[in-house]
Image (cartoon, rainbow, N blue to C red):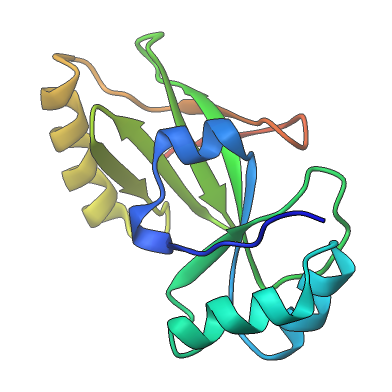
Length: 151
Protein backbone atom coordinates (compact mmCIF):
# COMPACT_ATOMS: atom_id res chain seq x y z
CA UNK A 1 0.00 0.00 0.00
CA UNK A 2 1.27 3.49 -0.86
CA UNK A 3 2.14 5.93 1.90
CA UNK A 4 -0.23 8.91 1.89
CA UNK A 5 1.11 12.36 2.69
CA UNK A 6 0.06 15.93 2.11
CA UNK A 7 2.10 18.94 1.07
CA UNK A 8 0.94 22.54 1.02
CA UNK A 9 0.09 23.29 -2.60
CA UNK A 10 1.90 26.63 -2.64
CA UNK A 11 5.04 24.84 -1.41
CA UNK A 12 5.24 22.31 -4.26
CA UNK A 13 8.71 22.44 -5.85
CA UNK A 14 10.48 21.34 -8.97
CA UNK A 15 11.81 18.36 -6.99
CA UNK A 16 8.25 17.37 -6.01
CA UNK A 17 7.29 17.20 -9.68
CA UNK A 18 10.42 15.20 -10.46
CA UNK A 19 9.44 12.63 -7.84
CA UNK A 20 5.77 12.61 -8.88
CA UNK A 21 4.54 14.03 -12.18
CA UNK A 22 0.93 14.38 -11.02
CA UNK A 23 -0.42 16.01 -7.87
CA UNK A 24 -4.01 16.56 -6.80
CA UNK A 25 -5.36 19.16 -4.40
CA UNK A 26 -7.83 18.07 -1.75
CA UNK A 27 -11.14 19.79 -2.44
CA UNK A 28 -14.10 17.90 -1.00
CA UNK A 29 -14.99 14.81 1.03
CA UNK A 30 -15.65 12.83 -2.17
CA UNK A 31 -11.90 13.03 -2.82
CA UNK A 32 -11.36 10.60 0.06
CA UNK A 33 -13.03 7.73 -1.81
CA UNK A 34 -10.94 8.61 -4.87
CA UNK A 35 -7.79 8.39 -2.75
CA UNK A 36 -8.85 4.99 -1.40
CA UNK A 37 -9.47 3.87 -5.01
CA UNK A 38 -5.87 4.85 -5.77
CA UNK A 39 -4.69 2.40 -3.13
CA UNK A 40 -4.24 4.66 -0.13
CA UNK A 41 -5.36 3.43 3.30
CA UNK A 42 -8.63 5.07 4.41
CA UNK A 43 -7.50 5.58 8.01
CA UNK A 44 -4.18 7.08 6.90
CA UNK A 45 -5.95 9.48 4.49
CA UNK A 46 -8.44 10.56 7.15
CA UNK A 47 -5.69 10.99 9.74
CA UNK A 48 -3.56 13.17 7.46
CA UNK A 49 -6.55 15.29 6.41
CA UNK A 50 -7.63 15.72 10.03
CA UNK A 51 -4.15 17.06 10.86
CA UNK A 52 -4.75 19.94 8.42
CA UNK A 53 -8.43 20.36 9.33
CA UNK A 54 -9.48 19.08 5.86
CA UNK A 55 -7.98 22.22 4.31
CA UNK A 56 -8.13 22.58 0.53
CA UNK A 57 -4.63 24.11 0.58
CA UNK A 58 -2.90 20.71 0.49
CA UNK A 59 -1.95 18.38 -2.34
CA UNK A 60 -1.15 14.70 -2.66
CA UNK A 61 0.73 12.49 -5.12
CA UNK A 62 -1.35 10.80 -7.82
CA UNK A 63 0.04 7.70 -9.58
CA UNK A 64 0.65 8.04 -13.33
CA UNK A 65 -1.94 5.40 -14.21
CA UNK A 66 -4.75 7.05 -12.24
CA UNK A 67 -8.12 7.69 -13.80
CA UNK A 68 -9.68 9.17 -10.65
CA UNK A 69 -11.54 12.43 -11.41
CA UNK A 70 -10.16 14.94 -8.89
CA UNK A 71 -11.23 18.59 -9.20
CA UNK A 72 -7.73 20.10 -9.13
CA UNK A 73 -4.85 18.25 -10.75
CA UNK A 74 -1.33 19.57 -11.37
CA UNK A 75 0.79 18.05 -14.15
CA UNK A 76 4.58 18.28 -14.49
CA UNK A 77 5.70 20.22 -17.57
CA UNK A 78 8.79 21.04 -19.54
CA UNK A 79 8.66 24.50 -21.11
CA UNK A 80 10.80 25.97 -23.86
CA UNK A 81 10.90 29.76 -23.90
CA UNK A 82 11.18 31.64 -27.20
CA UNK A 83 14.89 32.09 -26.43
CA UNK A 84 15.33 28.31 -26.35
CA UNK A 85 15.83 28.16 -22.56
CA UNK A 86 14.19 25.10 -20.98
CA UNK A 87 12.44 25.36 -17.62
CA UNK A 88 10.40 22.87 -15.65
CA UNK A 89 7.13 23.57 -13.92
CA UNK A 90 3.52 22.46 -13.74
CA UNK A 91 0.15 23.29 -15.19
CA UNK A 92 -3.49 23.10 -14.24
CA UNK A 93 -6.42 24.21 -16.41
CA UNK A 94 -5.14 27.44 -17.99
CA UNK A 95 -2.40 28.24 -15.46
CA UNK A 96 1.26 27.55 -16.25
CA UNK A 97 3.84 27.73 -13.46
CA UNK A 98 7.57 27.78 -14.24
CA UNK A 99 10.37 27.10 -11.76
CA UNK A 100 13.72 28.87 -11.80
CA UNK A 101 16.07 28.59 -8.84
CA UNK A 102 13.73 28.65 -5.85
CA UNK A 103 11.15 30.92 -7.46
CA UNK A 104 7.84 30.25 -9.21
CA UNK A 105 6.58 32.25 -12.17
CA UNK A 106 2.85 32.00 -12.78
CA UNK A 107 1.28 32.67 -16.17
CA UNK A 108 -2.43 32.98 -16.85
CA UNK A 109 -3.07 34.14 -20.43
CA UNK A 110 -6.42 35.56 -19.29
CA UNK A 111 -4.57 38.03 -17.06
CA UNK A 112 -2.34 39.65 -19.66
CA UNK A 113 -1.09 42.55 -17.50
CA UNK A 114 -0.04 40.19 -14.73
CA UNK A 115 1.59 37.83 -17.25
CA UNK A 116 3.60 40.75 -18.67
CA UNK A 117 4.80 41.62 -15.15
CA UNK A 118 5.77 38.00 -14.59
CA UNK A 119 7.62 38.01 -17.92
CA UNK A 120 9.72 40.98 -16.72
CA UNK A 121 10.63 39.11 -13.52
CA UNK A 122 11.58 35.88 -15.24
CA UNK A 123 13.59 37.70 -17.93
CA UNK A 124 15.61 39.39 -15.21
CA UNK A 125 16.08 36.09 -13.34
CA UNK A 126 17.37 34.24 -16.41
CA UNK A 127 19.25 37.23 -17.92
CA UNK A 128 17.13 37.30 -21.07
CA UNK A 129 16.57 40.51 -23.02
CA UNK A 130 14.12 39.25 -25.63
CA UNK A 131 10.54 38.13 -25.14
CA UNK A 132 9.98 34.70 -23.64
CA UNK A 133 6.76 34.23 -25.63
CA UNK A 134 5.58 32.03 -27.14
CA UNK A 135 6.36 29.34 -24.58
CA UNK A 136 6.13 25.79 -25.92
CA UNK A 137 4.93 23.48 -23.16
CA UNK A 138 4.97 19.70 -22.95
CA UNK A 139 2.73 18.08 -20.31
CA UNK A 140 5.07 15.25 -19.34
CA UNK A 141 2.70 12.57 -18.00
CA UNK A 142 0.19 13.09 -20.81
CA UNK A 143 2.63 13.57 -23.67
CA UNK A 144 0.57 16.55 -24.85
CA UNK A 145 1.69 20.00 -25.90
CA UNK A 146 0.32 23.53 -25.79
CA UNK A 147 1.56 27.07 -26.30
CA UNK A 148 1.47 29.97 -23.87
CA UNK A 149 1.22 33.25 -25.75
CA UNK A 150 -0.32 36.60 -25.01
CA UNK A 151 -1.60 37.39 -28.50
